Length: 434
Image (cartoon, rainbow, N blue to C red):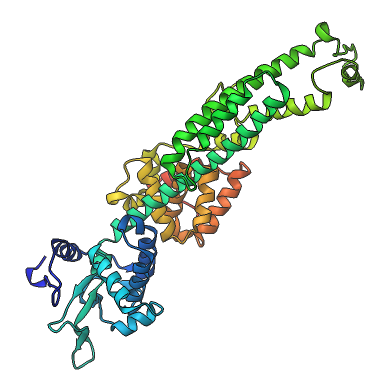
């Protein structure tokens, strides 16, 4: 950084070490990397919790960007905007002057803009005889361009954390629904069981949750509820086994043995003649509900407690689509430029890079979330890396991702052939079809 480029604030505003650090950062801009100012602004909005700005401060930043005449921010002396307070107030929908100054100070403090004050504190620009701006005094947007990669990484981290929290809330909702209904089944079918104690433990676990729980509050409660659900399912399974053994002809004569397996004779009439603890219809519904709930157990024996049919299909699809990270990076080397620090060293880095690429390719958040739900976060990140590698040949990345997601739900798509085709193309063996 050239020492002559350091500027100090006008009037009583003191120079701070943070202001000097922001100026040093702004001087280290990659001149070969222009960035769309509105895409960068949306990135700042996504990462506002990490950056430390409010929505009102972002409204002021939006107004400042609107005074920059070009769509893309490029390095140079032309990144200074010099609007008056009246014009700024108009573009912030009539924001009061004191509020405007406070949010401008916040943007300077967090290092998103710089003040470049004139000798008299006014904002203006000097033009040459051809009308070209030679020097300007006002607000410098250079820190935004210099911190673009940092802001994109922060936005990707926020999006990934939000996605994890959403998935945890979905699991919590399903677990609460399952437990409340399974305990009701246990209460109705076996009055001598400890259903009252199970329900008390369930209510005690969920009462600790705040109104809008975060990931840190949800995870310990999920552990408790999963263990409680396994216990309830074990009791229901024992009850089901007793019911099956009670249906044996040697014990209660309800089962009618027939030497004609194709006969249309049913065994229900035998149930009507026996005195049992509950009616046949109630028994049938209970067994069906226990079997369905039994399939939804997590963390127990795979042979007796599996996921529901649809969830099992999706999980099977995810497991068979997994690829080593090194293979994905060989097939899609372009994705590494969008990882933290310009490299991808883990699946988490790949998922963070995929969030940045999603925004760059104009893929909607809904399409990305649906792909993560159906394919899994790692496979969805791999698919986005493949789409980035083939982006010159793809007209609509968002539409292509949605189509692949729908095909995966029908078990018509796997990421393996896509990765291997790109791997062969990059090695020069087999060219890709355009």
